[in-house]
Length: 504
Image (tube, rainbow, N blue to C red; front, side, top):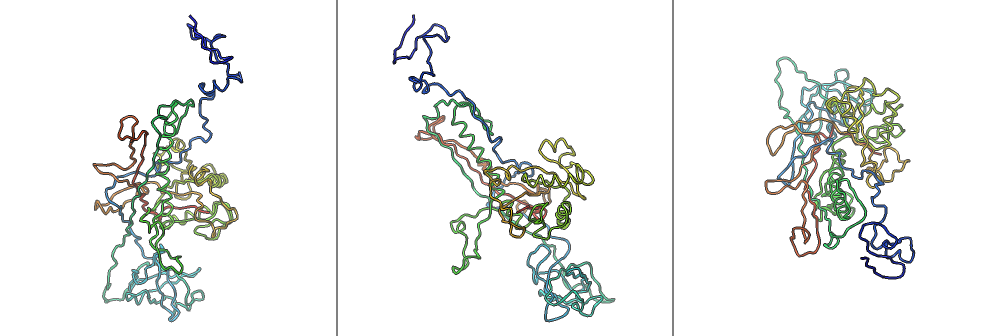
């Protein structure tokens, strides 16, 4: 039998033995009088959430070029080989005609009396376009060395070498007379030791117990694979995805806290505010390259191009070749991956278009098992220039409006005034480097970039998650669900002299 319910004029709710729409048993949502009652219970007709930003995550960079390894200490220490040959910059001393005061080595590190030039060494002295060869006659443990030119009485007799000039020196051999004694001292092999400390990162998602059981009528999906009609799954998944992005972005952007402040003014030398508060920070990719790597300012097709503020040259390919010249000075890396913003990527496309599809000499795909299809599937395009293979791809982190793609860039800023925060791309060497691990006490091959995270048999802090509260397996009297996220990690950048940061 039919059972009628009268809840007001115009509302029909007469039961029917079959699930069919009849004149007497449906709600008319178009009825303005009863629309408010109907909208309270009936879902919106557009069920699926619109994905207007595509894939919103920016992580994946370190997965392509690095690896992850556990660590148990409060810091990671590694050593890198020094250069085999001796090269320095110095100043011709004003008080004498054949004395040079050594200041820095070829990598810009102040050395002074710690240089390795010895009596008997033969050196090339270069300034401007002038080069003179000489033998070192005095090197007595100070920053000053005296030389005997092979073609001049005095070094300053050269028309292009004057007192107080900045010169470059490198040792190419030695010479001794017959029947003389040998070297008085030896050069010990030099290595560089670096360290980094991990930082602890945390995040939290929280929802009260009542809302966990509430049904939502919008179908949602996310980058972490979550999908369904319960809205809190969407929010929890977004929190996890955002935290994963923060894990990678921190390894790229993080900086060590400054323990001394040279701009403290009348207050004297003071640590930074973060350091004073007890936060150490960690060295991220950009800071490591800035401190120990190579930097190029300006774009590759404009008047501001040049390596470390150098004068730009005539055409696009010549500007790109400036980068190759710098790589030649640093090592024997033959394969590089270029992660670029869209503007810089298009400029390189234009450079290559003026040559041929792959640049001069074609390319190989050794880093991708010599498979062009594999490279293309990962978003890389390859080309070869000189003896180098380059694999180019757009980097979402530099293009996304909510990350570095949203930073304001002044088009009128020149090369030498380019703000440090504006990043156009980064060039990362492919392959591995051999380093001495201080903790293991032996040489190991590792990727140039890898993440170290804290882990032991008791606790793994690579990407730790846990849930507390009254929902599910109750752990407290709090009528809510709390999802906690934690990681403790740092980035190891080995051989930073082989990296290139593109600024401005």
